[in-house]
Image (tube, rainbow, N blue to C red; front, side, top):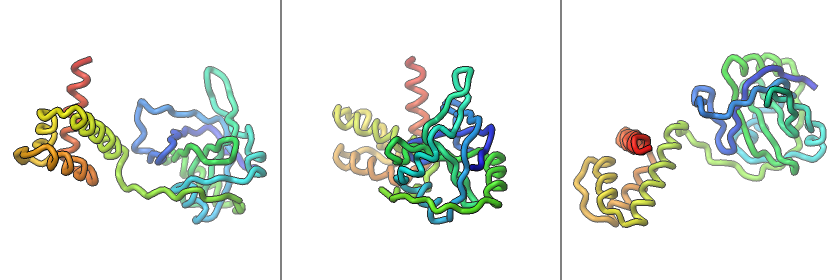
Length: 214
């Protein structure tokens, strides 16, 4: 078994963040050592864009092989590993049933090192079931955050029948005069299909106003 040493990972249970999207507030794990497996491109695509479940035999092989620096010492992570097809590297965490639950991309320089190791590795045939293929998103992390935040703001204003807020949201997003609640509500939610500069402006205005209230 080949190990990679001394890397940083940023696990997420949905879409793994690209290294340039990592934030200072993220929980970054400092990994002491982690096993690396080389797989084919289709398998890596399923690992990256889907939810899978590996066979119990692989889970047994993987158990407690990954070590992490934590709380001033070294702890083990039960079911964590790196996978690469030679062009991309991805870390996955599995639960006790073998289902993938978290993923992490890597820092660019550390991924380059993994790709060098993976080049000479023999591919394994990973036995797994593809439980779900997730819809590929081309949105940035910030765009996804803006969409979730504004959707919550719109829903709250509509549920509270806050006409003043709905009018404000509408005019900020569309630069048009607010006419009626029902039409405005539909258009506001529909507009979130594609995040544009007015959405970003509204997001930052609202976030700033909440911070000032603290």
